[in-house]
Image (cartoon, rainbow, N blue to C red):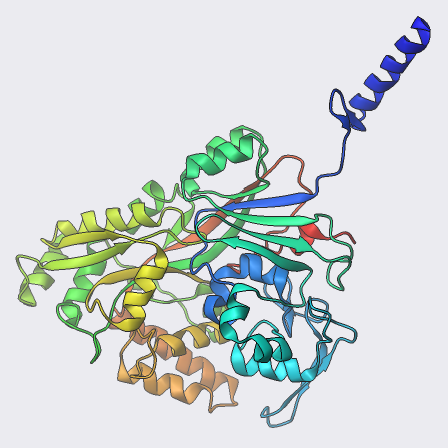
Length: 479
């Protein structure tokens, strides 16, 4: 009997060493939850047209796209509802062939009517026409259903969003994780502590903490030149307001920043100085735009002070600067404080307003804080993505998110979509970038390389290059 007991113990010890059991806790079970800790959820909404690209982290797991993308941002026939598509000779009509048998989480079949409804409603992720028309937008925003591999379970504002896997999905097969939880953890020390204790699997990192986490053996995944960090002035009801209405002031504020120092001290060397406001560098090659050395703003405080004096602001002025964090920008508040410090050398007294991003977004869209400064880490894109961003930011009384407010740029952008000659389009886009830089229509700060850390036992992961979408399909796939 004693020998049998001893043999049983040896057998259990061997199984434990092989990872088959956990001694003292019974049989080990496969990990069933994937937990992601982020510094910000941005708008923290569940309805795609309200959250848009800012919250693809969790929306991409709940909804499908008409046309999917690969991790490097190229159109994919495997990743979307459309398995193929073609255009008419005049490019005015597109035909999409839809994947058969796709259903929404409530069991309704996804049809061409849902695609048309989604395009008209969101221009993006696919949403159920019948369900939304039945329950209304308000209910859908609280209890969304999509056709993605994970279903919505719960949202606690300021805390977490929980999703649960369906049995099987055309994108990823049988999901590896039954539950996917996105936790809002603004404090970086807490996020790192959760990773070290094994309570989360993926964390967003500031650039300066990468070495500390790497030393502990945690894998680091980078997105190179993922975004451009640009600052701008909130418009008033009639457009740009003084002092930033004066081109000399805008140039002075650009010259007062030491971008190389910001890249090193705030972003741990994981950033590169930027020169063109809203200049999405992935599009530069597409349109043949060359960012020459003379376009880079030097750190030139004497010239900045002269420009301020010439503009009548030798003693500076008062200015509000909103300070907040964003997904992919945990250093947001620190960066805003540093920039305000540089501008203080020009006599500019910046009142830092610490808020969550939605509060700034409301002031920006309502134009209720004219002249105040905000910022965004704008996702890098190719030429069509750059055009879409610039067109959105161009001035119009009907567009709440304007920042550019330049009739010459508006005219060039309006011509782009009327052209079918690619070289003419390229020339227009190059001229837009040149004008943005020469008029100093914003404050380009840096291009960001964005790091994410994962637990040591997580499978290999291609984090991709498409900002706001972390391609969790690869981690969750049971294929």
